[in-house]
Every structure is written in structure tokens, then in C-alpha cells.
Image 1 (cartoon, rainbow, N blue to C red):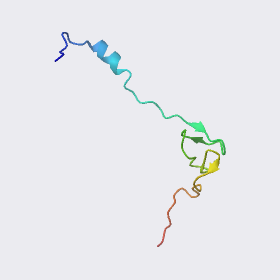
Image 2 (image 1 turned 90 degrees about the vertical axis):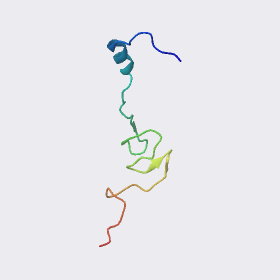
Image 3 (image 1 turned 90 degrees about the horizontal axis):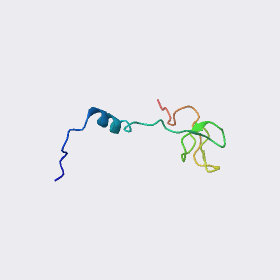
Amino acid sequence: MAVPKQKQSHSRTTKRRSQHKLTAPSYNSCPQCHSPRRPHRVCPTCGFYAGREVVAPASSGHDHDHDH
């Protein structure tokens, strides 16, 4: 089994860990309504994807009925 011969320095450890970070999600503008949306996903504002309407757009912020 391979075992390190020397202790790895703090400098080398932090250089390696400098790549372990999250990146902010990318956004593109929707070709229909020009609002920001994630790439390869249905637009939450207008409901279009690939030039056609896939889902009806959400009107009031939530999509369920209140029956009281």
C-alpha cells in the first residue's frame, strides 16, 4: 500500500483545496420574454422552452386552490 513519505505542508494543502469551491449558477435570458432563466430549463415566467409553450405560466405565485 502506498504511504506518503513526508507530511504535506499547509501551503500545498491549501493550494489543492483552493479549487474546492461552489460556482454561482449561470443565467441566460429567455428568447421569448427576456427574463433571466437557467439554461436548458423551461422559463418560469412565460412557460416557453425551445420556441414553444410547454407549461402554462404561473399567474399568482402559487399554483394550488384555496378551498375553505
